[in-house]
Length: 162
Ligand code: FES
Image (cartoon, rainbow, N blue to C red; front, side, top):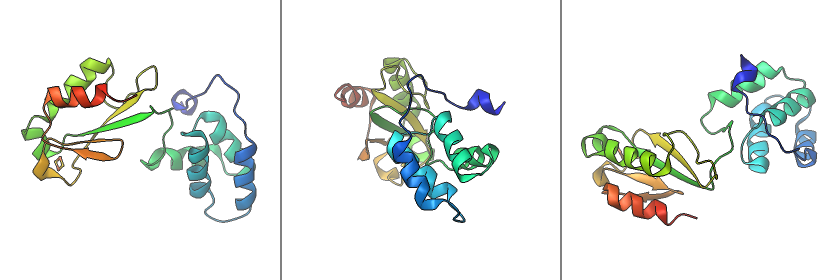
């Protein structure tokens, strides 16, 4: 069951930079979260091999490592796109047409919300209220808030992403 949800990778990962991080935390209480954060900083996400390596070296059961990695939204278990588009579907955005923005992107990109394009150009996410309700419907493209969206505008903005 646990193995089914873990993402494995084809390429061989260089664990040397991760080992350097782990060396700093071995024997310390509460090491799992900072090590996972640093590991994600190195590899961009947390593939199964990395989780297993951390489990072995910190001598923390894999079930516990996996539990932490899946509990916190900051951790990604799958490789992410070079660009991240977060569309808001909170109440204010929803009543102003967020569903059309999201479905436009899904259709244009050929992926569903929560997925990444096969070429890793973009990861599409749906979030619920970005705190900019006055600009609804809103999205955040690579950390930048864009508001008063219409399907044509989001299509144009996303087309420009490399
Ligand atoms: S509901 Fe979308 S920004 Fe608040």
